[in-house]
Image 1 (cartoon, rainbow, N blue to C red):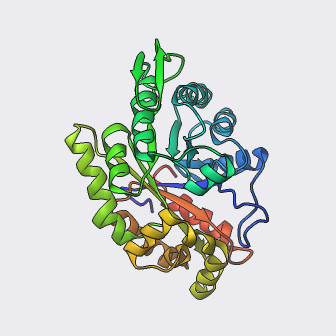
Image 2 (image 1 turned 60 degrees about the vertical axis):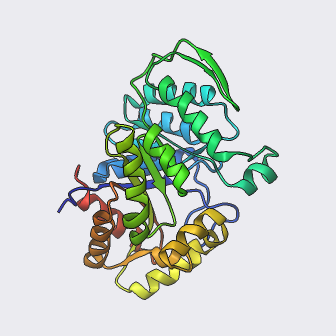
Length: 317
């Protein structure tokens, strides 16, 4: 019953803040992340995604890599403003060695409020920052030497050669960032983005940038709240309790407005197994290459049912 044309993955560590958001666990410990990834692998899922909330996602990926054998491990996503691209490339290369070639580095600019208020760092020229980041980290993760002098970063190094090449995907929503992701990376990771916006905006924008640069068709990884439950109304109510806080974050608000949706909870994929499968087919048909399931609890059986269905739909099951 595999769903052809879309890889199936799930968040092994979503991290929901303190106190925890109802319907999801709080920020998981490393042992829980490893257990989730091992369970996803046993079910047949293709990718385990690790959020960078309290536990460092790249370091956790290295640990998960030594505890699994098949599943792809990806960060979803690692913030760039507080790390020099050379330092993150070193860390990603080490994680790739631990994962045996199964690691994908997902990066993003983070949110302006967090960067400026929480860390006291500059958020000036974010698109330029990401462009330079990719111009440095991308070649370094392919083992290429680097002599780079940019407006923001400088790097001179002979190249990193101790692991297989590492692909980068970029959390991108605006057209400039989607362009960077298409030209300089392997794809994008989006959240709070509905099927219409994916089909009409995200997929064609990043695809055109990749084509113009002579690059392969990019990966489009899209996160959706998912809960398999008989009572779809209860599923949407649980999603509202779990994900309502995202609607006030400006970058997500813009994508929700494009879709004409009040909040992320309105994008939830819920209902019984047949209903969820039908909704996932719509996501695939929008051009999504990689589903990132944010599994949430509606009742005490919904999580197990959701994971079981995703395993059945996965092409590697």
